[in-house]
Amino acid sequence: MRMSEGVEWALHSCLNLSWVDSGRAVTAAKLAAFYELPAAYLNKQLQALTRAGILSSSSGPRGGFQLARSPAAITLLDIVTAIEGPDEAFRCDEILRQGPGGDPETDYRQTCLISQGMRRADIAWRRELAAQTLADIKSSVEQKFPAAPLSTRNRLAALRA
Image (cartoon, rainbow, N blue to C red):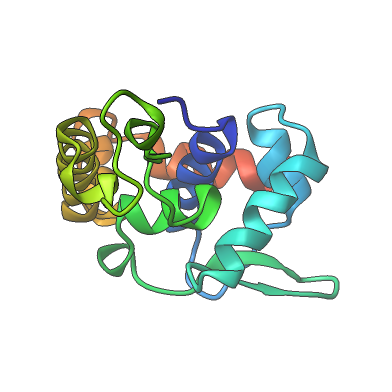
């Protein structure tokens, strides 16, 4: 399974926003310029995060995006789901129904061992993402790279985008 690049962009943008002073918003253009990303495409990801209640946005000269919840209340699964949607990674199309001995009355999504295995893997993946919060990632980054919060704030402030 491969997630879209928007997931990576959204995760990093949320982490960067976690270091911005409370009450301050950052424009999509500045968030995009931080990593030299296309602003229009990043803005779509930021809008998806806003619809999911992860970010809030405001317009005007001091407008932009900020976290709508505390980092401890945002899981990695929240961010991934906001960008990729809630669907399972594997979709059983019940091809066994057309195979030898296929039964049109059987729900192969429930009885197929491949489908069951893929569902278990998807659940485990989602459980792991749901167990990690943005606060967990933020704390780990700050321990490993103590200068990251100040460096991020300074760089965002210096960007002219």
